[in-house]
Length: 85
Image 1 (cartoon, helix red, strand yellow):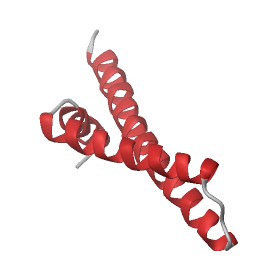
Image 2: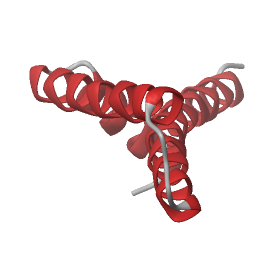
Image 3: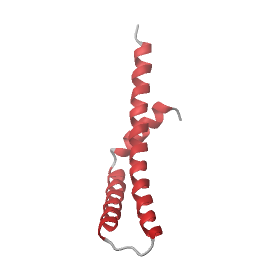
């Protein structure tokens, strides 16, 4: 799968009802982790680190998907510009 196909596939996925569910689920998990991080009393530093890693994973996943979609669109535009006389 090339960059354009991947971007288009992820864009289609992002606009689907299934992705809406997944996105909402991940957002709820991220919000809960942030809330726990700011309100809980921790006895172990490893517990804080685990929540930070969760938040980072959610953020990176969304960022990666958005980046791949953006790159795919840019590659498509570049290809289309080359094809025009």
